[in-house]
Structures are given as C-alpha cells and as structure tokens.
Image 1 (cartoon, rainbow, N blue to C red):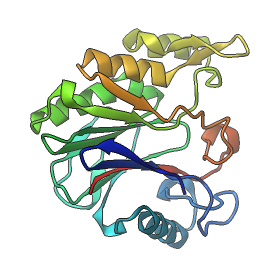
Image 2: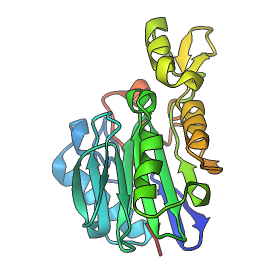
Image 3: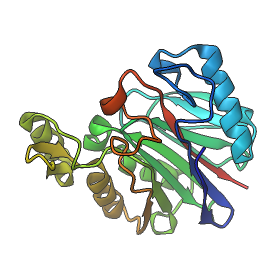
Image 4: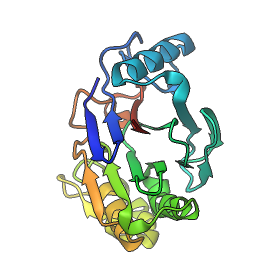
Amino acid sequence: MGNVIDLGRGVRAAVTERHGGVSAPPYDSLNLGFGSGDEREAVLANRKAAARDLGFEVDRVVWMNQVHSADVLVATEPGGVGTCDGVVTTRSDLVLASMAADCLPVLAADAEAGVLGAAHSGRLGTANGVAANLVAAMADQGAVADRITVFLGPAICGGCYEVPPHVRDETARDAPEAACTTREGTAGVDMRAAVTAQLRRAGVTDIRSDGRCTLESPELFSHRGQAPTGRFASFLWRV
C-alpha cells in the first residue's frame, strides 16, 4: 500500500503502490485512475480500500481531472474539483490526491496557515510551471512560501526519461533545469530537478522527495514501462 509520511504539525502524506487491489491485468491491482481503461467498479473499490488502509474515508478525498495543464483550483468540498492539475484547500477535513504513472506528484503544506496543495507535474505541466502556480495559489489562501513543506512523490527519473532532442529543448525553454542526458546518452527530461528549482525560485526551502523512479520500481505503475497500466495516488491530509 505504501507508507504514511509525517510532514510535521499534523500533516501526513502517502504514496500508494500497485498491489493490494482488485483490478485485473494490465491494471493489476490497486489502480486508482478512472482514465486508464480499467473497470469503474474496480477503481471505486480500490479507492475505498486505499483510503481505509491509510486511515481516512474515501468521501473526504478531492480528485482532479488532470489534463497536463498548469491550472490550479481551490477545493471547498470533497469529490471532483474540476479540470486542473493543481488544487488548494483550507478545509481541515479534506484529503488532496494527485494521480500519476510517471509524472511528478507535488504535495505542499503550510501547516501554520492551514493551507494544503497538491499538483500533478508532467512534462508539460513542468514546462508551464504548475508547481510555482500551486505555491502562488496557496499564498492567495494565506500560506507563506518559506513556511511551506513540499513532498515530491515518485516519478520517472531523468536517467530514464528519454525524449526527442526538440522536446527536451522545448521543455527547457521555460524550465531550463529539465534538460538532461539519459543513461543511454540521449536527450532527456528531469522533472524532479526542474520542479525543485521552480519551487526554490518561488521561495520554498523545505523540499523532500520520495526519490523513486517509476520506471525502475516494479511496485509502482509506469506508463512508459507498462502501458496500458493503472495509476497510483499521492495523498495529502491533516489529522
């Protein structure tokens, strides 16, 4: 299922893994994503089981309709918040979720202000600064950048994320730290490096990371490694 991570002052984060659910191959088995092609009833059962095992009710969770944008919305109630790739809330009873299968989950909290944020930073979201937009949206709700703690979930690493040279160059125009070379000596994109740099420029200093590469970690879903495949979730909540 994955471990619960204590981010301090009553804030918890967790990353689910691929085993422990009811989905059939190729989504086996704890797939939490509707958009993957899996059976809806299996995903609903998996979401309920994941929430229960992590210690909260599934009806507290805020889900984004993720589209690789840089848009951030404010959640005032559980359920679907709308089409976006970042969500912010000041409600203490809500659980924020970011879905991924290679993209970078970004979980952020200013516990003193009572503001939580979650984002899904894929290549396009990284290029367009969704993580910085998340920090700005949190500030609009009363957060202070240098009080924010960020947890970066698992994502495909720069050593594995091969792209055509023109795609690397396009990404690096707005996110220069994304440009890298893979282990094979080809053009690559390093989303974790780019997002870390964006967060630091936005004033965030406390940045923690899961560190795992989804392509190299069999316990995680990876679109590049297994497509079609499921999605894992990175959750953020207050206790």
